[in-house]
Image (cartoon, rainbow, N blue to C red):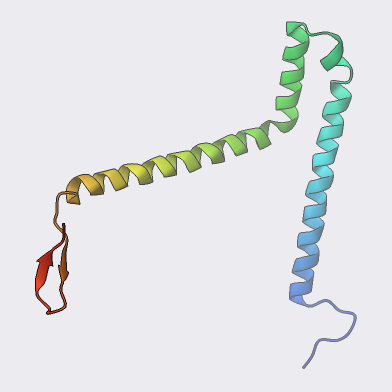
Length: 114
């Protein structure tokens, strides 16, 4: 039995909810940027003192700290996986690097490959 007109199906509801969530995230990011701009308005260019720069850095970390830390963590995790894979490949080369490769010739007999 086909769904009635005017009512959303399950997949339609999920898509609508996902779209609303994405719109909410975009709106939230804009609000954070606006808040940060309001808090640091005029401080970046007027005075370059140590205290002003420290205040700007603290405010930025308070507003966007979780996003920055998440990006750094993801980058570090990616790098560690890459290093681990490289170490495993080197270990495999060390264990099996001295082995000779053999291939079967046209007559079916094994021949050593140089």
